[in-house]
Image (cartoon, rainbow, N blue to C red):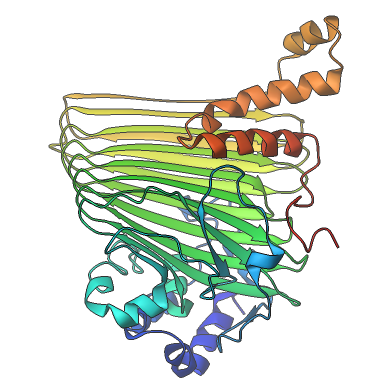
Length: 448
């Protein structure tokens, strides 16, 4: 039996229960998404976009799914203390795939800003959420998106109305917590209307050492003259499997910073699609992956230039040790009529051992003649001459090795606009290279 059959059976047997524990807006897309998933099934490795990720194998194990929305008897504010020092974020949690509503203190948000449970807000404000939910994430084009749309019952919403600025950075922590193997399906919906501004940091952490499978679909709408900084940090463990699809659409003169960082994981497949729909819009898409053991990180990106005078900058770096596997496929598409496009795509990779593997495929597809576009990719190893030079000056080889690795990924960290987060990541990356990130210093559970 193919892996998708168990999910087809799951939905057919529990469709009513899934609907009862969600909202009408989310339920409205389930049947069409199920039809698409049943028709397409999981993509095979013969599919170009998934050639380095064995989807069938990763979805085949029997995971539990919390369709009844049974509450976990935990307070994440008590057990999880991994906030970024001095950044003073407005801190919120999603436990597995449910927004944790018992927030001890509510952040002072500008008038009209909505932040919280996607399920609750789509019931309270259906006319607003219906305009955006599922409009970018097309189930007919991707099976993981279709499956997530079938099964997701809650998630996170950030809505910032016209000309409002959320001064305080928002931190959303996705906590995976279970006594048995678990599948979590969550949605994130971010809407910035004209002239709005916000900064959002999303962190993934796994508390328990069981097997986790997560599907996540993120939809981001950035209105005219709006500005959004969106950071993602994955720091889980080797028993986690993560599939995340992010879709973003930018209106005229908008600015979007996307920075996705994988510090610890098991198997990760991230897909990012950005549509520059309005004239003069700008996106900076950055990514960093540090992997060792048998970890795998697969990033697939598309930046679609649809309008004139748009700018895109893309930078991804991988540091692979032991038997880790990295994959990057990045495509810049410049449509006919998208004149005066400026685009730069760069992918740089280091394989620290002979057993590590990196697969890279930067692509340009251009249908306009007045453009400035470039792309490049490199795969190499640590510079032995630099290591020798540092050792000659009294630096032990292991320390010299760590310093070179840190310098390599630092370019991606420096794209972060939040100074406190940048400083924190410098510490976390150094700990990662020293092998000291197996436990989280601020987590009460890890200290037991």
